[in-house]
Each structure stands twice: as C-alpha cells, then as structure tokens.
Image (cartoon, rainbow, N blue to C red):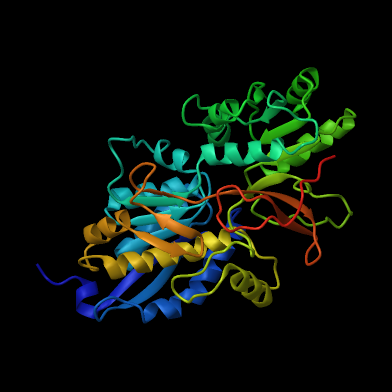
Length: 401
C-alpha cells in the first residue's frame, strides 16, 4: 500500500464545515473569522515536521449541504479532522457524515444531550469518531433558575411558563430524565407546560391563555427570534407582559433596534452567557484574551462580537492540540484517540474530555446574562450571575418589567 498524501507531502489538513450561505451564515461568521486568523498560525504548529493547512467548505445551511461539505473535505482535501459550528439540522448531519466516513469530527454550539443521545449514542455505546464540547440542558436549567430567583417576589414555587415547540429544542427540554424540565423542578419551580406549538408559530394564544390562567410572570423558551417576537406582540395585545423571559436559542446574537424604532425580540431577555469579553479565558495558540479577541473582531469587521466567537476559536485550538498529541498525526484513528484524552485551556475555558459527563463530550460552564441597552452597542449582554464560571465578574443587575 502506498504512502498517504499527508505522509508524502508532510501536510496535515484540518477541514472546516462552515455556513457561508443560507440562514446560518451569521453563525458561520465567527468561525470564518477564527479560521482566517488562526490558519497562518496553525501552519507553523504542525507536529514532527508536518505543516498544517486549514480548508473550508460551505454547508449551505442545510443537512444535504453539510454532508456534501464533509465528503469534499475528506475525499478531495484529505482532511484528517473536521470541525464545525452549526445549527439544529446541520451539526448532526456533519457529525453523522464524519462518523460514516471514519474521520474525526469536533463540534460545538449544541446542548450535549441532544448531540449525544439525540444521535443514537448511549452511556455504554459512544461514538467512534465524533467529539463535542458544549453545555447541557441541565446547565441551562440551573442558570435560568438562578435568574428566575432574582425576580422580586418570586419564590421556589413561582410558576414558570414554558414556551416550547414540537421540534428537537422543545422535545429535549421536556425529556423526563435528560432534559431541562427535571432540573428546573428539582430547584423547586412549578412548570406550566401547554401543548408544544408547531414551528414556525402562527399564533400562541393557547400558551398566553394558559400562562394567564396559571398566574405566570416568568416565561422560559427555546424559541426562534421570530416566534419570540410573535409571543411578545400577542401577549402585549392581551394587556399582559411577563416580568422576565429566559430563552436559550438564537440569543447568542446581539439584538439591535429596528429602523422603525421597535424593540428587538431579545431586548431584556435573560439567556446563557458562555463567552463574553469579560470571561477570564485565553487562547492556547496565540495567548489572546477574550477581551482582546472581542476587540479585534469588532475593529476588523465593524460588527459586534458574538458569543460563538469563543467556541469557534476553541475548535481550532483543540484540533491543533489533537494533531500535536496524537501518536501518529497522519492516522485518523490516532487523532480520534487524542481527542478523547484532551484536556486543554482554550478561548472557551478548560475543555476536558477525560471527565465526561459521557464519552466524547466536554462541557462548557454557563453564566446567566441579560440583553440590556449598552454604551458601546444598542444592546449588550450583561453578566447577572456568574454561574459556574470561576473568576467571572457580574457586570450588572437583573432588570425586570
């Protein structure tokens, strides 16, 4: 058998499956920025005489495009590892395609229970090739409960209305063992759960009426920005307004005031804070801090820094670490084994695959944040509760209506 191209050319290829077109293109922006910034630095960090090149393919924001991107990266570019930052349909498609092709895959920005159990693994039968780092649904519940309990007058039995859809977000939130709901209940909160709505929603009257009847002043959700806007508009039409809304989906993106002057749907919403400029994180590749990365992104792009930027940077950091620590960096099985024993400080914090919670998974700690009017931008993510992020300062107080 002849030598592989990697051995022959002394080049190791990192493949990046990234949305550059379609509805997830904005999620692709931070990954593309990290790629552009780190690719030249990775070239000189190859193990044992190898250089590293980074090659990307557009997933086109679809499952089919994701599978085709992986196929091109593996067959045409000879990628020895693939990384991705994607959405509900695209990320599993990338990971499943890598699993089928026998190439290591590293991904993020997807609750780990949905990634792991939702793709068919279990505690005794993990994946062979695909690895992931993210927070869990249980972490979201704990962070949101921290926020709920800061609402004046709320107690442990304060009813919380659940605005959940009939898709993966809502289904896994309701899961009786591995979802959001059992952790929230264990914190003493009473959940009001109407039948899930079909996404995209055309009306949310049933939820609004159920919340009114139960005396709900706090609402939690995993809705899209569009459906969240619909809920807020219809609630206002009925003369009601929750004192606090928490939402875990699409809230990574900074809201901005519309041309008509209307408030964006995310305004005042409590959400996850997994990476901001005040997080005490530093890159293992170039030593850049979170504050420096956020500033560089804004000066370079003219746009507000996004939370996924920290995850995107970490994807390439972990890929580099796996290549340099693999027993044989040209062998995909060896690289997968290196991912499984990785423990490294990154721009997304300490990522440790040796601790679990299940094989192939490393967790990202969460803090509680809220989108509030800012000084540098229309809205900024204020850290209200530090959660499990050690050394993270609170930068503001919770604001309720």
